[in-house]
Image (cartoon, rainbow, N blue to C red; front, side):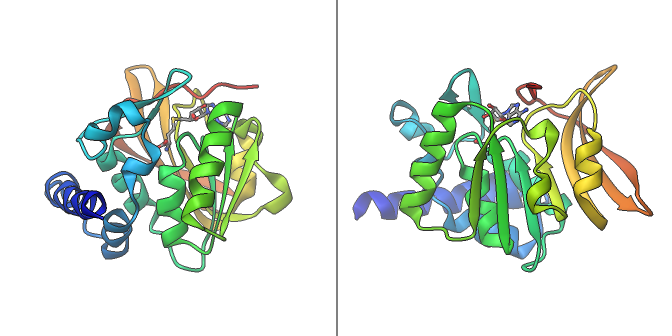
Length: 212
Ligand code: SAH
């Protein structure tokens, strides 16, 4: 119990100092970050760092993203409670849980089996009923449940795959890290009349998206 209280307090400090202080204003995003236990998704050896301002290793050469970058991406997505969301790269499942707090349904794909199994176990214990996990290559999208109002990509893509654009609703939004000539950039695309309209939100650092 004392440990859980301690985690709640550390989470409050994380939200104030890392997320609100840097300008995130979406009230629902802030509430979700206050609620979801990040320490639950971090390997035991990094527990003491679970609420630090940084990404952390989750095995298989992958990382749980820095809290602020997740908050920024979710604010850019402008999630509505009625939205169905596609997440590419489940990783630890932390962002998946935050998405489940904000949206109607979350469909998430992970290509690495051990991470997929661990995320499924963590999310199962927390009891979410609006999360649907899939193992596979997210560059192909997830056509069987399309279209999605929002798509979020958690690993840096070399390009924007046609499957993602096709699986977005008209007016839908995709947020992703994209590899460019000068490095990685955080990109938001809004689908209008079948075409993506792109805005660049500046440099970022993610693990690479791997095709296949
Ligand atoms: N938001 C996650 C970030 C995980 S890191 C978190 O906070 O834990 C990115 C994840 O994308 C890794 O788990 C990696 O295995 C996965 N990934 C990379 N390429 C992928 C692909 N083509 N399809 C699905 N998942 C992929």
